[in-house]
Image 1 (tube, rainbow, N blue to C red):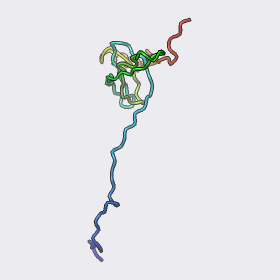
Image 2: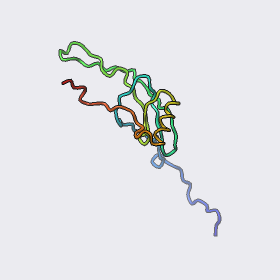
Image 3: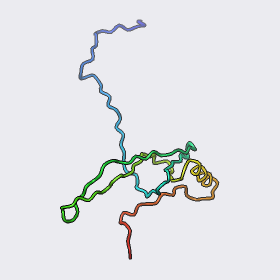
Image 4: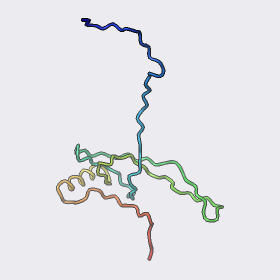
Length: 130
């Protein structure tokens, strides 16, 4: 009985036997659009870890130029769109600073307020005037 087996034939890895490992691709998708209040910061609360953190918001530098009905004048659209990469399991809300965010979170935990999220939903049909 051999303790250390001896190889019967030297094995050299060829190109067909090499495995190429590709980096995992991260997929981003649009979860939702919300109206933000000017001057407030966006916070995320993770109830599983009981953690409150500020969400970094990036403003895009691109402008989309769309021709108007006469096809002669280009109208700027989507200037300075704000985007944030978020975790969908967190609860997101706005507050002035970290201190007021912690106060709002304490009120939510004690039951004084029912909903932690105070973001406004975007109306896809726009504003209607009757």
